[in-house]
Length: 169
Image (cartoon, rainbow, N blue to C red; front, side, top):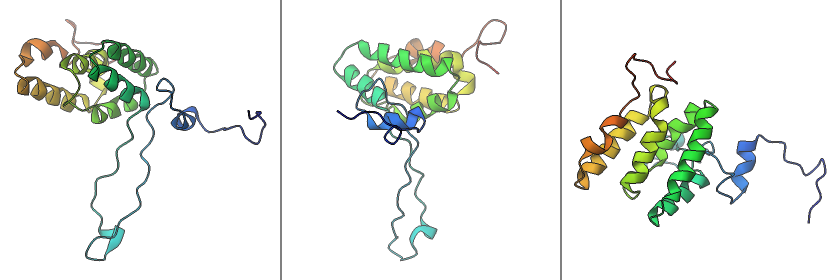
């Protein structure tokens, strides 16, 4: 067993240290790693490279939740709600917004996708990617022969009678 000394302590921020662990509860969204430029067939190389920027890696906790959902267990929603609730409480809307790009709409259960929309509903005014995700979930419901209006109608955006929401800025 290694002893902790000043030389071997990792002083990087927590989100960078978490990438080394296999524990899904400790991992978080990691920034996209730069990809080496691949020369194009025309020989012009990176200057002529038009690839999309790499998206962040899927956090281990999200992969874990998706595996649980695939097994048909409702515990996936608990994992999802606990993590996203922490991000909302910390007002880390950028990370939540990244999740919408990382969650597939083909594969997860409609229940799981509705959970994503439900937990993010109060912050919908601050999440740019949520409306696109909502549209993809709507299409997934329609593709599966489900009544999207009945399932998702109230999950589009946060509203109150007075037109305000707890997280609208």
